[in-house]
Image 1 (cartoon, one colour):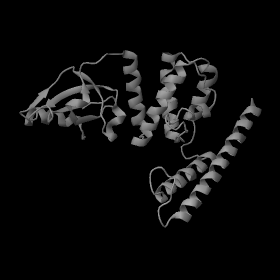
Image 2 (cartoon, helix red, strand yellow; image 1 turned 90 degrees about the vertical axis):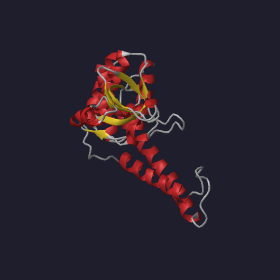
Image 3 (cartoon, helix red, strand yellow; image 1 turned 90 degrees about the horizontal axis):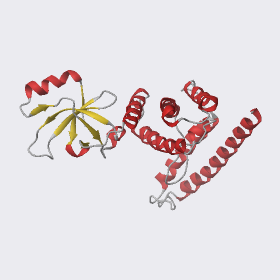
Image 4 (cartoon, helix red, strand yellow; image 1 turned 180 degrees about the vertical axis):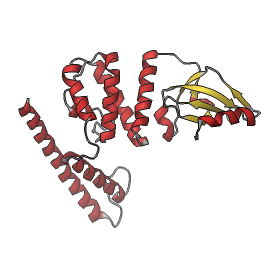
Length: 259
C-alpha cells in the first residue's frame, strides 16, 4: 500500500479517465497485509476508485481514522454493507489516533490490540485496575498465557485508551484507583529503565539466541555443531526467569507494605 498526500487527490480527477470520485461514502476496512493491520476494524472514508480491467484490479482511495490517505486498497479489503455501532466507531477512531501519536511499530500495534481485547473482557467483568502491574498484565498472549513485556510507549497508549473509554465501561473505582495508575504511567519518563525492564530485555535476547541455535521451531533440540551454545542459553534462561520472579515478588511485597 502507498500513503499519499491530500494535495495529490486533484491529480486523480484531472489525470485519470478511469477515476471516479465518491462523496460521503464509507466502508469497514479489513486486511491481512501485516503493515496495515493496525487499521483493521476502522470505518474509513472512501474517496474514490481507480477502475482496473476487472474487480480484482480496481483500487480504492481511502482516508483512515488517523488522517492518512492510501490509494492502493483492494476491493476485498472493504466492506460497504456494514452494521454501524457509534460507540465502537468512536473507540476505534480514538485508538487509531493514539497509535499514530505514539509511533508504534507493527509488532507493538499487534500487541496493543491484543491487550485491548483483554481490557474489553476484563472491564466488562468488572475488574478494578489498582496497580501498574494490572495494566501490564493485559499484555498477555492468549495462546501461551505468557505476559509480553510492554514498552513504555505501549503502556502509555493503553493508559490513554482506558482513560478515553472509561465512560463506556463505567469502570468501578476508576477515580479512586485506576485514574492514579494511569497518571503514573503517563508521567513516566520513556528513558527510564527498571531492573525488570533490563531483565526482560536480557530474556528477549536469550530467547532469540535459543531460536537461532535450535534445529526447528519447537526449540527442543540444538542445531548440529551448536549443542554447547544451545545448552548454555537455556541455562541462562532459567536463571533470568528466576531473577524476574524474585524481583516481582520484592515489588509485590513492597507494594503490600506500602498500603
